[in-house]
Image (cartoon, rainbow, N blue to C red; front, side, top):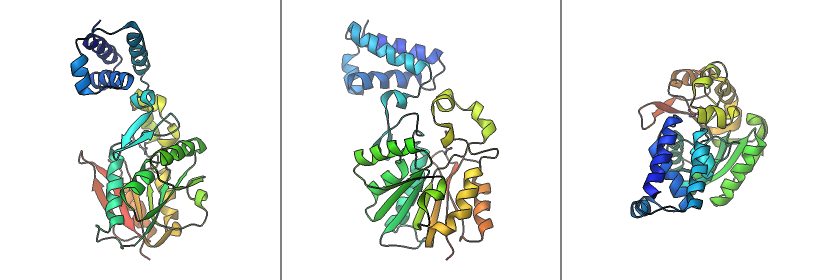
Length: 288
Ligand code: GLN
């Protein structure tokens, strides 16, 4: 069997298993296994594969056929140009979340006139999961001290590994939302909380609903359970004119903005769209 025939076979097996990107995944698993890249594959395409490699490759294909996420097979996901270790204890960082990080980074650098400028920022990544938000912010901005908290002790273990791998030193706290940080206050609270409506969980892709932590996805009946709690208590954990910045589902901007307004404790609510043109991030500054 030639390399390209092997990959073609992998692709058709993934297609039959209803994977979203069979062609891409079949190639990516080959790169992962052999440490090669596109150019390497181009050069190797017509070479015969030995039996060991074939066995190892189809073993990976069998895992992916079971709809195990590609990132759980390779153990990593790129986010903001950094590599994050992932496993079933943490949500795999999504590209959508880079919108939140970029928006927050603009504020921290002083490029957003609607928020108060500060020399240094104390930032809390609330519900940090893999640590993607806090760790990447710490890497793209120099003037911040980052803390990260999560309810899941196992998620925090992964976040700690990711911090170390990416050479940042956040403070970590375990606990139920703000209970984790006691009475501490921050210049910015950033969060990508669970926001999927419970009744929508069954229609998610198998990769997500069977292999990713439900705890990081399920936002309760209307998807807003965590926003209610995060927003209500945010004023007690923000410093003067501090910023609350949240990732939201594409149809949640109105509800989440409404919750922020209801507190009477914030200035105007801003909505930021993702690259697909969907509402993805909301932020507001504390009034006092
Ligand atoms: N964006 C994720 C998804 O659609 C959900 C993330 C979350 O609930 N915070 O799978």
